[in-house]
Length: 357
Image 1 (cartoon, rainbow, N blue to C red):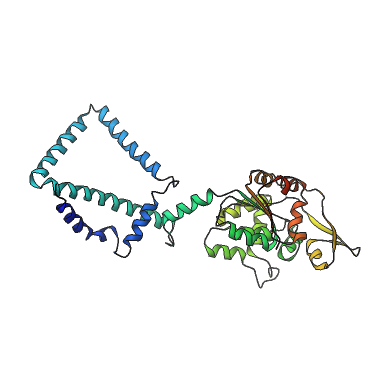
Image 2 (image 1 turned 90 degrees about the vertical axis):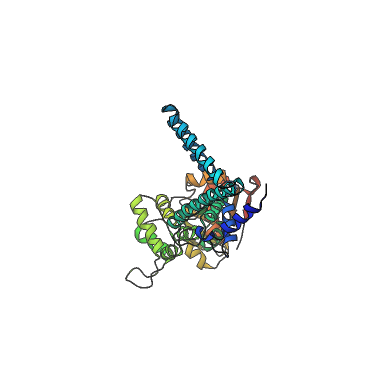
């Protein structure tokens, strides 16, 4: 059978590719995006095939229930229609035309459906839906990482780690008593939210404006100067929900973070340090300002209990990272929680990593 009519028909149909919303410049990109839907692990194709199977089974069920009458008439009508088409148009033309028309309708319908879904889910239009799905699957298959620390070092580390895995747990010290966190701690009695706020913002997957709002620091106002919106939000959520752990969980949903942020303990921990010159310094911010050689460091109350979820994350981790950050005021305060120190020793954990700034 000659393929000339087929090639002729194909050339004619390609002139109508604008029907699919394509331009000649965008066609290769669009085809490439469609091939991405065939990538394994998207959990889309299997459900589409399952739905198609359901349609077939439903049709068969109706046909059997009604004594096969609809199928008989449909087959007879289809046979007469095909016979009429074959008598008017040669098979070498009618076959390819019907085949390509069917494929174009399927392609057009699927393209428009996915475009409609993309416009609803991603109105900003900065990425393709398939790219977002592929990224989501890749990140959620990443290693389970636990990062222990505090200060700006931990948040900087998390900002890079979130591009490699969504299975991240940040265990943050609650010994901070300086700045906005220290004021809220003294005036309201809440655990310091500053380091936790920075980690939430670093792991945020939400739009940039919401993250900037969470990090916004007031520059005027009686009593507001120096406070960040995120600190006040976490403080209010702690009062409403009852504890800092629930407040963090609620804030994590607002910011759509990749992973989770957990305080090392829910105890009201205060650091102390003994210096080589005999001084005993109380408070994390005072230790930083003392500028002396530290001989011993501890906390009050001694041996605070660890957050159970933090221990579970350490137990299930593929990789534990301690640092970067200030050794005495960001890293060691987490290890002053005995249960955390006991579950992450380097000699017993092959995936342990200690990072100093």
